[in-house]
Length: 329
Image (cartoon, rainbow, N blue to C red; front, side, top):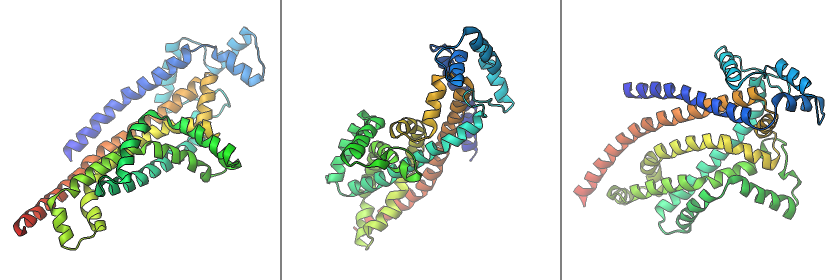
């Protein structure tokens, strides 16, 4: 328990410099990219294609965007320490309000994606672990390689073409509720299942090759009992850690899928903020996303040893069964 607390404290200390580096890099990329923030935002605000330099400079001053890179970033960091994330220059609303109103759709899509990945990975991995050389076993080997080379948004474009052009499905694009998230979430989950299914298969096969499993079968235990009481305790620690880490990657991947399927999540908001150099919205949003990803990593780092400690007890009991098996056979 003391070791776990020390690990928590160490990871939390590391998170703060990581968040600063993330926001600093994001701020620098946007600040030094082509275009003047005051000019871009004023043209957007007035719906004009051109504005005078003096008007743009005055508008930037009113927004607080006049100053050097370090002045802007330093002012933003001071406000962050006071709990003030600023307001979006695009609509005048607070960064917190804009972020959470849009990101909840993105987060929901990521949750559905991870659920799809877990269901398919466990189903195929457990079956392939029991049935060596089966179609599921061969598919896992194939898909683990292919999925590394295929970006989810590319599959999304193909799926969109098939659904809208070939099937004439009018509801494939746009957002009309949680059902609109199923297809993009399904694509992300299926693309990412290769690695997890290989881990589940490997752990399952390792347990199934133990002598006590054959002994358990001779005592009348079914495949279901073997999976529940012997296989899952070995599989869960690694699989849950992978799922939590994949969820953090889905939080970013969902942004591109939203753009492909025209879902009004955080993707459009972030792209528009980058396009018009809305410094506070970009940096504040990445700060929140960074906190969520760091928190997910912390959860994964905490859950794994907890499950592993429980797994050690199971391993001890399995060794007793092996001894019983050896005594009888």
